[in-house]
Length: 144
Ligand SMILES: CC(C)(COP(=O)(O)OP(=O)(O)OC[C@H]1O[C@@H](n2cnc3c(N)ncnc32)[C@H](O)[C@@H]1OP(=O)(O)O)[C@@H](O)C(=O)NCCC(=O)NCCS
Image (tube, rainbow, N blue to C red; front, top):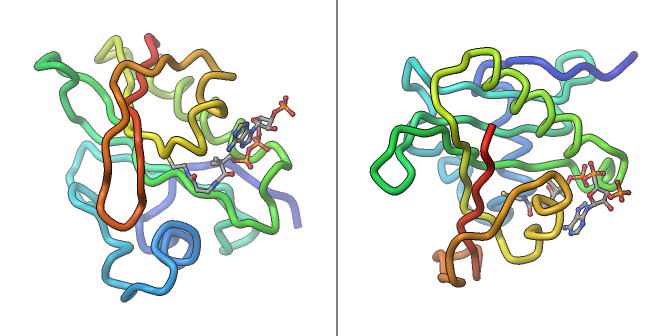
């Protein structure tokens, strides 16, 4: 069965988020603020009904300007390094350009993934700051 990148319901990606982003904590921590807002988009890399990669896009301002926020990106460790992260990011950016609402997309990236985002034209725009449980992060920004 082939892999497909598409919009998914949040229920489809909770197990993956739990395994990759909050392993060892209660499953309820894999539900994030804004998940069920009408403007939120969940994008999955799915094989049949099984998600192996995901990200979420939220309507959240950057520096007081309306913007999109990328959140909770995760790729199943068995599939990391196989191009799924690249495909998810490209799908999301293409969709946001098509929607053509806001000029910028931003995220709070763990320092371990900053170079991943830089590869795709994102720029770090903050100093490092600590996020409970998940360590040091920097805010990253891309013009769509
Ligand atoms: C970061 C992550 C999303 C990348 O997804 P992935 O599917 O492994 O990435 P891809 O295979 O599409 O990689 C695309 C390119 O980025 C590079 N890359 C991937 N992860 C990287 C990282 N952490 N640091 C630097 N480069 C990275 C790859 O080597 C590849 O480069 P190439 O095109 O020159 O070969 C994934 O590894 C992950 O889920 N990590 C754990 C959770 C996490 O940190 N999430 C980020 C939250 S915002």
